[in-house]
Length: 203
Ligand code: PCA
Image (tube, rainbow, N blue to C red):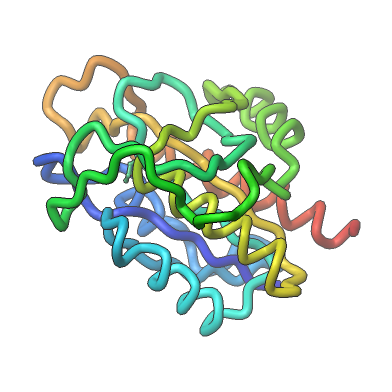
C-alpha cells in the first residue's frame, strides 16, 4: 500500500511550517505502507494542480494532507471541507480571495473519507492531544482539502483522503503561544496513517 502525505511551505512571514517539517521526518515505510511526501505551495493558484499531479504520479491508497494551524494546541483531524475561499491575509503569491468558491457550482462541502473518530481515539490513546475539527478554515488548507475530496468523489479513485491540522512546532517557532514538538507532530501523523491504512485493508 502507498500513502501520499503532503505538507505546506512556510507562509505569512514565518520561517518554518510545522506541517512540512514534520512530514519530512516520516520514515519511508510504516508497516506495509510506503510513504511518499511532497511539499505543496501555500498558493491558491498553484496548490490544487500540485496536489492532483502528485496523486497521479504516486497512485496512492491513502492521501493525508497536513497543514499548520497556529494557535491550536491539539492535532486536529478535519471532518469537513467547504466550497469557500475567504483569505484574511495574502497567500505566498500575494492572492487574497474573498467569498469565492473553490469549485464554482461544486457541492457546498465534502466529508473526509479517513476514519476521523478512530484516528482521534488512537492519538489520544497514545497520549497525544487530539480533536476532531469541523472547521478547516477558508484559506489554502481548506481549498486543498476540498480539492482532494472532490478528486476522490469525482475521478473514480479508490483511495481515501483527509486533512490534519497541526499546531506550531515549539522547536521551529520562537515562543509560540501553543504548540508541540516536531517529534510529537510526526508521531501523530504516523499514527493517523497507520489507522487509515488499517481501515483501507479492512475495506
Ligand atoms: N496552513 C494554512 C495554509 C498552509 C498551512 O500550513 C491554512 O490553514 O489554510
